[in-house]
Length: 228
Image 1 (cartoon, helix red, strand yellow):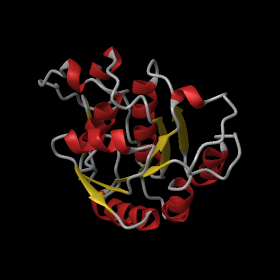
Image 2 (cartoon, rainbow, N blue to C red):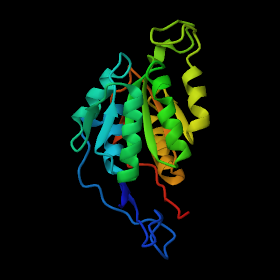
Image 3 (cartoon, helix red, strand yellow):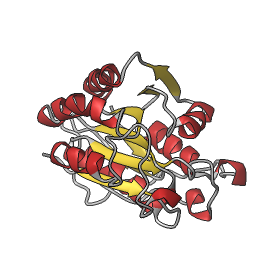
Image 4 (cartoon, rainbow, N blue to C red):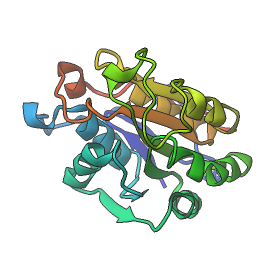
């Protein structure tokens, strides 16, 4: 299949390897003719649009306290369907199978209790070279640095344990707890998953998903999927 991210396109050569168009040093551009309204220029809707643009039409998810608003944003995006799973490990393996069939998959879980549960499936996808976008609804951005102990955690004030667990089994990790660079970080994570053909980890603070920001009206970060 062809991969498209916003204004950029990476074609699949005849040998079956995803890469740049033959005999070309850059990817072709595709004009985005649909303007993004202020109500849609939120972090969650930006992420949802990017998933659709790379070919993800189904996100396998398990709801939890920290990702409820984000899941609402995913549901609101045309072309994207949220598929509820009975547990996080099933969601991870469903995304694994989806990536094998469609070229890229996505899953969405809640902080720590969900992230640690889906970890084995993401590790398997890493060993199988499957691009999966693992999205985690994280703590409120105001909770970082407060030394609070949150529910659905292991009972310590360190919120980085989940991130440390994902580092060996993902090729890119990002914690989004501010809006200024969220656009770039999301686009870079998705493009890295496609380029490296490995899972990536995106954690989004639960209070930021529905917040609009001018950067979410921009085109995606340019990238090219180089032939292997």
